[in-house]
Image 1 (cartoon, rainbow, N blue to C red):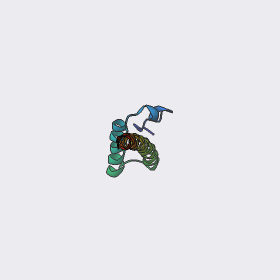
Image 2: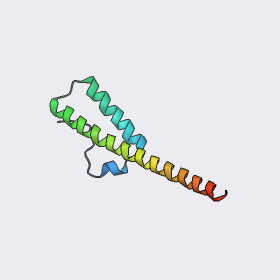
Image 3: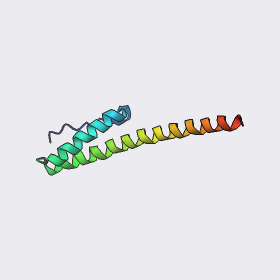
Image 4: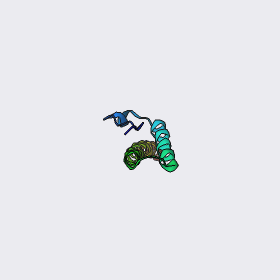
Length: 81
C-alpha cells in the first residue's frame, strides 16, 4: 500500500488544531474522491478518526479554558458586590 497517511506513533500529540483539521479535510477529500483500494480507504478512515479525536481534544481544552476564564471573571465580579 502506498498511502500518504502519517502513522508515526505519538505524532498526533504534536499536531496543532489547524494542522489536524487541515489533514482531516484532506483525508475526507481523498475518501470522497474514491479511486483508492479498500485497504487504503480503511487506513484513511482510521487516520480520519484519529485526527477527529485530536481536534476534539483541542476544542474540549479550549472550551475548558474559556469556562475557567468566565468562572474566574464571574467570581471576581461577585467579590465586588
